[in-house]
Image 1 (cartoon, helix red, strand yellow):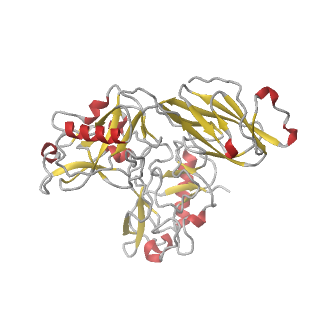
Image 2 (cartoon, one colour; image 1 turned 90 degrees about the horizontal axis):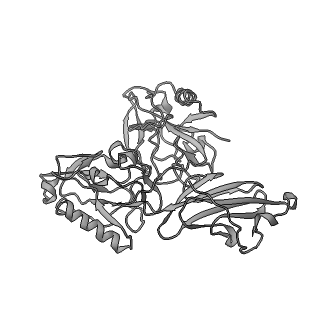
Image 3 (cartoon, one colour; image 1 turned 120 degrees about the vertical axis):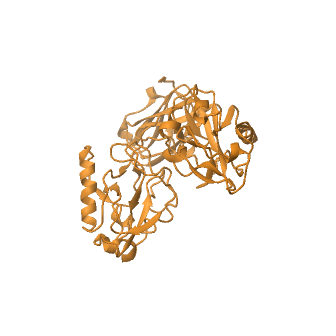
Length: 432
């Protein structure tokens, strides 16, 4: 990691100042001075309120103490904004309340390999691996993405995962980190779902032809990608998944699907800058209704304590008098234990889509399962036949709504099952 400090030039005022460090007065003038320092060997700009701009080195933002501030890191061509350290984390916006003496590190690196799913669709007769590569190259060229792009597709002689050996680091075209190592496509170490196309548009949930399940070629390959008939199958993944986006199951070759396009040839580490916020995790142990919501809360508290997570953890369960949202303070950010926020904004309970799925337990291991919620949406109050009679019924007489740990679509339940089922819970830190 390379860091360097230069004297910054002045920028627009309007109550915000960018001053050389040696000219800064003491803090008794009521201004909080926040230092932004550059790290890495990439090129970019940090922008903030009222025209604040920092181009390199070390800059100081002077603003009245307590002022809400939002900073953005804008990478130059052939660079990537890798993220924030200290007050903020992640690699999207940095929002904080200004206090004197804060230091925020902004890291820019050379551009890693890019990944996208195509905006165009095809059935299983797209012509084979070489033809799929040509589609990816054409889609990348259409939006000005330079580099070598291939399709993540296997056939009888080609293992898609093996074609990535020698390359390192992948990000979506919107800058979200996707994977660090080529082995991530075999061991499922994927961060953000591949939900963006070459234009950077969010495609949501779409099927993707790969013929590959976690690095292993599948037998179902639409007659080596030459057939689009319904009597044959092809291995497909789903774009809304993250770690499971490199898994696959078989669907009829008549299915209209996308291709996952990966750039190769670059060797740039893609690491996570842990973000701030309250903690969320899926339980490793499964829970069966019957003891009420307090019993579910006890499991959350126990699993949090087992790894030293402090604070109050409650189950994300709705009752007939209280939605999941109403259990927790409004306006909070929630992050998984790996530091990645479930939603970049602070409206977890009102969104239709999460940015990443809540698929990690309190130790950071993947939980791929349903989880009880008892409601259609996180901000809705359910009926008794949607939440096992306020979680007091553990029989087959009633049913309860479930969401899925590896899904990012939270508009509707994934399933509704009898109340004698034992499945995980989603635990959220209560906060204040």
